[in-house]
Amino acid sequence: MSTKPRTPTHSPEGAAATELILALFRSNGLLIAAGDRLSKPIGLSSARWQVLGALAEGPATVAEAARRMGLRRQSVQRLVDALAQDGLVQLHPNPRHQRAMLVALSTKGERTYGQIDQLQTAWINDLSQGLGRRELQAATALLLRFQQRLQTAEDDNAEEG
Image (tube, rainbow, N blue to C red; front, side, top):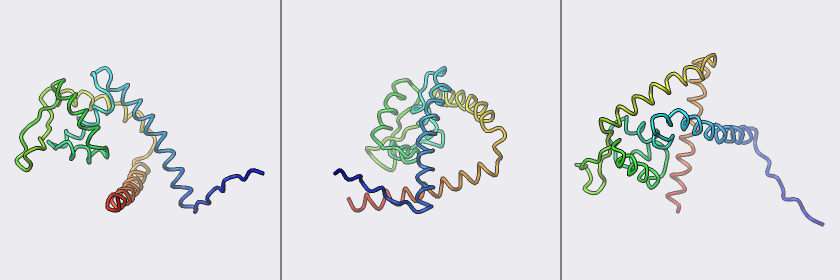
């Protein structure tokens, strides 16, 4: 006689949050594919575009850029190295830290980011047509609250481990 593993029972909120997470996973894959299509004519990938976007906010260390993007420092370091090799970013001494260089967009990087920003603007204006600004703002507010809870849980786990 085989016993079937017990399926945990979610609270109504837990079930809804699970559906949200699954939708986010699917959306993330679709967004990366769309980003790759948008950025390919400019010679970028979604990942490289994401780093340029984080640096468009201003110069940052690799660790700071990674935090802006919600990624690990090591993966961002590899992307920064490739972007530097392509002349899209420059490394500068950091007056706040001797070893952690500041990464900034180069002139070529600013121009490239401007090109992809124009493509993204046209794409997102078309994609969001008819969705409603208030509905999108409410979804954003919910995702930011969810993100904060995830970050708090991650920070708590890091302190324990």
